[in-house]
Length: 260
Image (tube, rainbow, N blue to C red; front, top):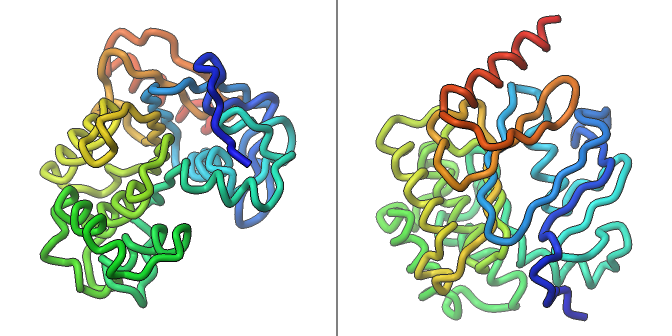
């Protein structure tokens, strides 16, 4: 069964009254969330530590079911999908975990190859050219055969991005990619994700829908992007912010909410 939708007006992601459950405890981290994401949009979702950013992306990827409400992903109600439907959907949604979350017993190259080998039943030799292209795109050629547990967090995060992109997903979800990075790596991520949004050569020059979480809006401000914030009272879309400072002021307000 194909999960593609031919109607460009259908959102690629839609939440209606969704309550997010924490992956570890099952307790709610957010309730009554309404959110619509359309194809080609670049969303930045800010929130404090513990606000539910990771739970949001895991739910948006279809990995963590909502505790309540309706989740539609790429035009389909997630709760109605069969096991085969879910397997067909997975390659179309790429999730980059905070810090990469690589399998430590595999090399960097083997981690990147894993989705191709799993979904296409391919050997490492079959996918080597594709893996090499993403190693080059993420500047990881020199670390390709290193054990994933032996590389720094900076580079592990890039490997996580390559692994998520190797199947050419339509939606890319990236969890706090700038956390703990030095300026050089920050610049690389900002530039790379913008190129992925606009249409990267390795993605066939086609625009991608991107959702990034952050704990600081300022590096992400750019005209044409959409912004939302997770607060103690719920999820809020920030309409037409005028500046990066205005966005950051909203996060400062949520710190006050948490203290009250």
